[in-house]
Image (tube, rainbow, N blue to C red; front, side):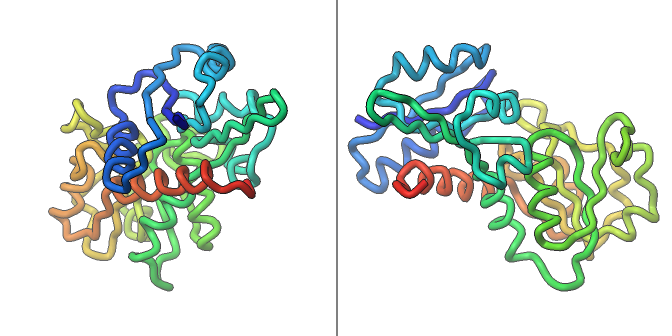
Length: 250
């Protein structure tokens, strides 16, 4: 039995186990199992891999997407540039274990945005500065967009929410929430921006997928914005993880 799973802490918010259980059932994949591994300290990773001898791959979630890098033997260029890994491939050769890191969020973000892209989209605001934010910025820059990053506290190259004025909003085409604001159970929370400044030219993308329609997206819909749920990204990045785990060339 090949085993896969998710590491992070806590894991109550995750849909990965349910997603892969349904995938294995629907596609009649009978030799694989997916489990959640709530790891309170990444120093326990080696113990987990040693005990779970059939473990072939792991997804990595909050708060370990960046910290995991120091445990890796190999890392793909995109993940290295972003500084965040959300997929581990566990290679076992001649009794030796090699950990290889990838970022499937890049695929999920790209696949979510591509259907909505056109030549008029030039400027984006990215809310949040964590690992997911870095993956978003990486994709947007590959698309050739100008990116303004927003955090709770102003830092070099990063604005605070209080710096978001009408001029910035009017000059922006795409706004992406990479923070946990709006995630179940705190579904009423949302990024602190002036939603009355939004209109039908704006695209709002929320990486939160539970609930599928967040308070952030609902406020955008009321203003006539195009909205993109995080559920598409969830599915796309999960399928990319599955490809990585099963591609012998990686």
